[in-house]
Image 1 (spheres, helix red, strand yellow):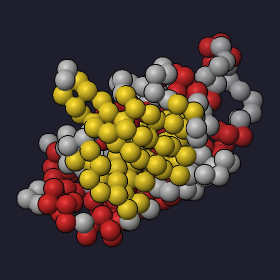
Image 2 (cartoon, one colour):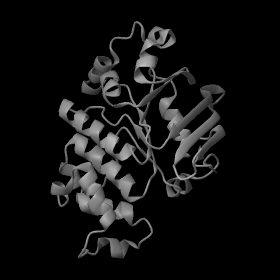
Image 3 (spheres, helix red, strand yellow):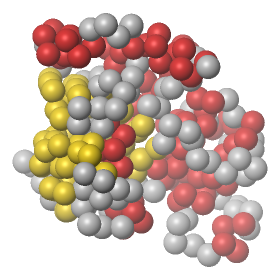
Image 4 (cartoon, one colour):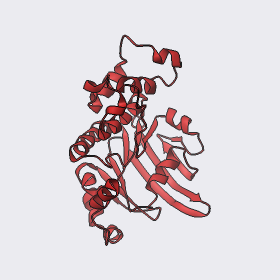
Length: 257
């Protein structure tokens, strides 16, 4: 592998909860520039897998970012190595402005006092994140008034200013409007060119539109992997999804409920 490009390499990753194997011997390699979607039915182990990579649950095996082992490190150490993740519910500071949210994310090492002072200039990395996420015009708005999709974009922006080069996004378009989903897909393509991006997703239409490659998990194991076309044509994948209504509609109903 070329050393100047980031990559995420998972080998034999397993996670058990009280004897139940949620993830079993998963191998996964994602290179910078390959927008990878991780799909599978509910309970397939998708979120558990990214929880293990980011230190939220204990896994065995190996998960390396560009040759550096992540397993066994603490959550903040993994974040400092440039591995960032989002959750299904965006975690932003609602009462602070978009700019302040980004400032706090960028200044993880600065004192609280210097963070609260109004800054005369905006860091170039923050300007860039605002531009990339399409939030420049909303920079002074409190994060709490943002639309659902915009909060997710802000959370992605917060990872960008922390220089995350591996992004693990957990169902980023759940509950979004069609327009927001389209914008989010384009955002993922923009940030995915020079980063490792893994998207956990239920929405099959969204995957078809934006994925470069797909890994299918079922029962905590890798069932299939390849291009969107190859995965959709795989009889094993069709069997797992057979009998479930189109996942996009099933997911919509659960978010509307």
